[in-house]
Length: 324
Image (tube, rainbow, N blue to C red; front, side, top):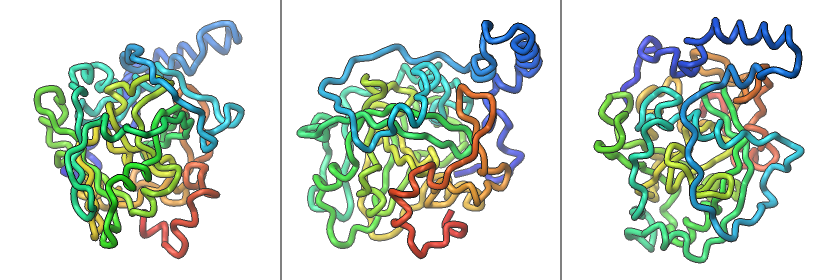
């Protein structure tokens, strides 16, 4: 990755362009809300306006509620419009609204994933092959971005462990590497040297086998929108969102820890583990608090994004400040 200096990253990549361009409009709107009371447009609607929401797509059949999902009374789910119009997907541009404006050109059918490396069942698998015999579940998960914003998203997917078991990793496999699509015809962002393309991410094998780690194929019971990583993306809810590789085309089992894209680009800012840790700040902003999209006030960041009880055992004895 090629981003080296803090000055190279415009503030629009931390705060959406519409937030800082419309500061005066926001102040006026906030004053209006204070004066008029609860009956007028909300501050959150003014503050978090973004791009074009995805059109609703095909419904997914047979989706069951997962017992690992957040209960509705635990967290309020973000809306379809919020989730599909405020995105990090640099292959389509660095502004939060860029993916929703241009990702519609992405061709997601047919789709295949190359499985390689230290496994017995190497090969090129169609998405239909991958989904054969898989039970889809709705998993309502917290999503925490390294830029200090968050959402609650009702993903539809299946445990990553099921895909791993199909591949039959060998005893040498210690890590799983995920590589995403590069398409110069439909992805304008890859024509810019923001990162070294294609985008690569990785997990330790035991992390990948954890029940909370899923491969998502849908959202709100529908086929996954293109700006959210269609047709197949990784979701690891206790880690920062950039671990969630989108539009995956290759999975490789390795003996050595792979170099993920942001770690390669700016190792002083982005590590391999990327666990949500409020005690380790990004060099340019705090991780101790976050702003939930749709809310005005910040909230305290939870260790492991609120999944500490489930995943902290994976990191027993590991220094989470050095291994950020």
